[in-house]
Image (cartoon, rainbow, N blue to C red; front, side):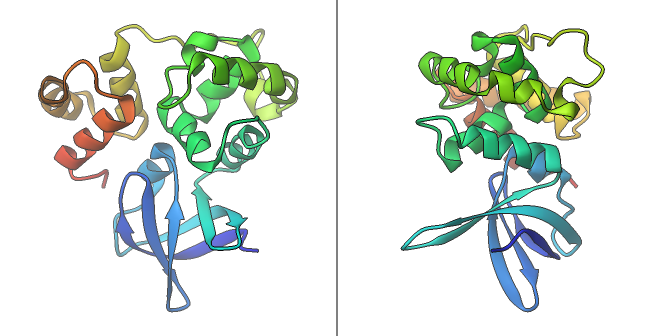
Length: 204
């Protein structure tokens, strides 16, 4: 089982990148946060890996931090949440904010993640609240879990995700309004982020 991968980034996209190690190119699925932490193609990256083994496939899920991997693996314990949906949740909110939202029982904030509806968010709180409260990195230094609801709806969420990926306000202001106008009010957060990243050419 692969637990860690170190190699050159060959291709880099918002949800899947190829990392070459020992002459082999590994396809690694990841969140937008890990995408933002990856260096440009041609540079070396180190990723923590969660390996999923099935009869017909072996899939790798990469993480820039131990905290994100830990929360990802907790999410997989929730009924109805698979690997892709867990990554969607981490991409839409981020590991720290998602942990706080689960601990606070903030259903509204959790359900803002792409593909996470109210019932799934409620199950996450019910099944993970106690576990998340035991994570030192998630709760350390907090008098109480902080709600993470963001003002501004889809635009506010998109701005927050892009800022967390390292883009400057001026860059976000340049691409986000036209992307929102083009995609319309029915667009999903991950769709907006991917369109913005295409316009920005990827971080780095």
